[in-house]
Image 1 (spheres, rainbow, N blue to C red):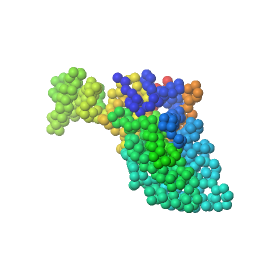
Image 2: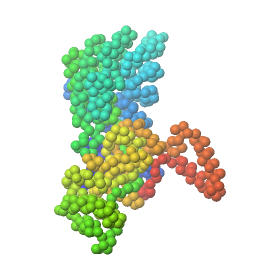
Image 3: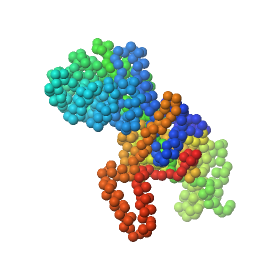
Image 4: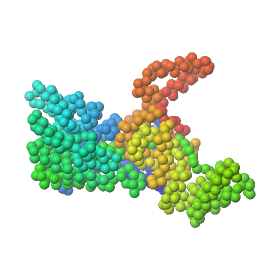
Amino acid sequence: MKKDYGLSIWGDDNYIIEGETIHLNYGMRPSLTEITRQIREQGYKGPLLLRFPHLIRKQIDTLFSAFERARREFKYQGRFHAVFPLKVNQYPNFVESLIEVSRRRHYGLEAGSKAELIIAMAKTPPGAPITVNGFKDKEMIALAFIAAKSGHNITVTIEGINELKTILEVHRECNADSPDPVAPKIGMRIRLHSSGIGLWAKSGGYSSKFGLTSTELLEAYEMLREAKLIGNLAMIHFHIGSQMGEIGPLKKALREAGNIYAELKRRGADNLRAINIGGGLAVEYSQHQPNANRNYSIREFANDVVFAMQEIARQKGVEEPDIFTESGRFIAAPHAVLIAPVLELFSQEYHERSLRLKPEGQNPPLVQELYDLYRALKRTNAREYLHDALDHMESLLTLFDLGYIDLEDRSNAEILVNLIVKKAILLLDREDTDELKRLQSRIQEKYLVNFSIFQSLPDFWGLGQHFPIMPIHRLDQRPSRPASLWDITCDSDGEIPFDPEQPLLLHDIDVEEEEYFLGIFLTGAYQEVLGMRHNLFTHPTEAVIEFDEEGEWEVRHIIEAQNLMDVLEDLDYDIGQMDKSLKTLIEDSELIDESEKRDLLGKLYLYLSENSYLKTIQSRIGAE
């Protein structure tokens, strides 16, 4: 029986399975195995992060198309705009691809720090919007004024009254001698009563870290009016949290924000024309239908936003606002896949070849009966024999504790019970019972995988966020091993444990004969920028896979993982001094012959030029 690993749930038609491999459903439809082989043949080992710009374009087009359809359907007069929040992924290979594939959409960038604002100023195409969120000092606000004077369409969102005071101060300084003062547009982030749900619910509600209360909104409005900058008030902004799994909280927040927009318009904020609904558009990470992450479609999302804004504008007698979104996870997550090779299997299961049975008649009766159960096991008796085996195991452990059987007998019992459990589970695979789920945990296989969870999947470690995981080949074969994944860090948290409710089944492999690659999908949002250098494992080697108009693909922009000395230099070690110290240790050692010293120095510098990830055997994939 083949297994699609929930591809129909999370894959969004981006991938298809053909034969034994998973392929991109685009262009000439290359397999991930083929792409991996080509990169590894160039000498890049360890984990690989593959980026697919066409998937960034697909997500942007999906978002814009949904809102364009909703605007036509409801005859909505406001326009739709979107910006990408750089906090989600600031890596150059991603940002460059994002800008390139979104030019026709006038897609912009959102910055939440000075460094991100510099990226936005340098990379945002002319006319495309820039929004600036988060806490800001005078220098950051001054950068926004520079951007405005440089011709950028930039909006600075006020998070507090003191920020507005600083904006007014910078405005006076920057335009003191100017007959035609230029300032960025101003937005107000509102602290809604409405809150989100899930892990990021605290992004909304009165306890939110950001935003102005109703009283502060009125105070800010009066300050802008007195400073003659009320004409720059162009946007109100709210955000109720990332990975919004249900649509209900957004509907409530839209009504609240829409009424605030209308009230400010009626007070005289004539240039206030936009509502920024922030991010939160969820990504479907689940590989199992009962655990789906999102209860709405993108079309429903767009329809609800447009309809809510139109109804409030009609009721209040104000113009329909432009709609801005800052969806980041939805745009970035699908574009990246981590490819990681399995290094070793740490088996809890036992093999028939490991049995140490004595000649017939010399084994303890219960051990002999276990062997007979194993040989006679079939579908019709699988559940009965399984129960008998588990009962025998308890009896045999008691006999061992009392000294009536020896260590070889105990070993044989453990092997036979595990073999019976595994065979029974395979025979009863169509039954979904709590008992079988518990038994899968008992025979799970530990796969040692060449990557760091802390570097590449920090949201799994920190938040329990699951990501789709599957082998990228051997998909024409039935997987039978309940699997947990161990990373190569020396930390017990560096594990993706087997979950009976969301089981990961993998294939039996011989790592001495072949390499077995796992793909971890939807890793393009947050994982890279949040990744930590636990054990000094660095960002993996990355590559961009681009397609031409004929659908041919090409590997471009390979950036190799940092070598050991570069990592140490980033931590402010004096690598010159370290290099000298290592060389001196070898040259002055009395344990090394003079003839060996040159060879050891050569090996040392070779190793220092490598990255921290483990080397693997030459694979069949790389050799074919």
